[in-house]
Length: 169
Image (cartoon, rainbow, N blue to C red; front, side, top):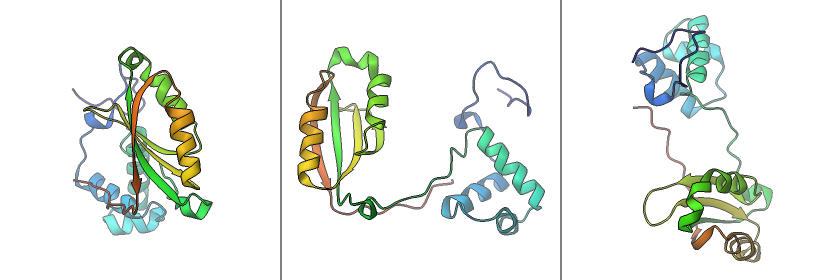
């Protein structure tokens, strides 16, 4: 399937899985994965293209959904959330038709950092951060396990989190 030209409106949204990246796009993505705050001038220099070309490429990568956004990676401990956990959540069979609503409810919770929809025995893995074990117990016991959609949870404490370098290949 050919990619639509700039400004064309495809019948369906073009997703990153439909996009073919050339060597320049891959180089841009690799540099941005390492340092999203790099200036366009420095990015263009590192990649070996003109600044105008670099800016157009970055805009196109954003438009096509390859670059999903730029975010600050804030250590939860700096905000007083010293305890992190991964919580596996298994939904009731009849609740699976409302997974979008369930996910929307999760991401609104202040404890929730990330939500992963997964295959296997569980439906979700949820990365949370709280200030204490009491807050974690309250979130799991009073929020998650009281939700009628939830069949069960399993909580694993995180002792250390090391972020891997972004994959660009």
